[in-house]
Length: 87
Length: 87
Image: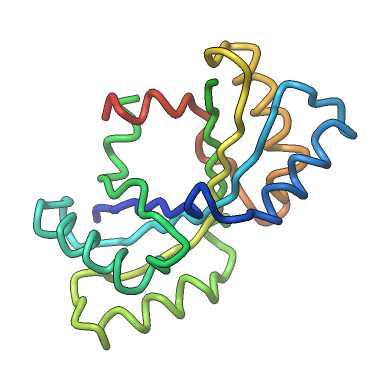
């Protein structure tokens, strides 16, 4: 089994109340290092066998059509989960 | 400005109704390649200057205390956004 990761974030000009709520709570827990917080979505799509370029292309297509709202969101990454281990 | 990314997913044994809703919708849009979908959260925490190990350590701490519910969620990644370009 392979997995494709799709990361979706709100466009930078869009207000992010969830992110602001987290940003407001962090200092109360003693975390002063973070000047802003944005919250988005992470999808993990399972495929049979290893991830192929065709899987990635389909995931990009699905990301634009279903996993994100192009008016307010950007698809910031579509990648093979296995590549995250390469970081 | 630097950015730390925190990825949070539901534990595998936890039912994911949002992921199932997406998994059910994909075939109706012609996407037959994906056998399962899990949906989680992606946080981008902004810091002043470049991301340091201290920032990453604080983000790991904040991820456990505020950004995730350890009973049902796992923090699957805490990393410098710049490392995503290395993929």
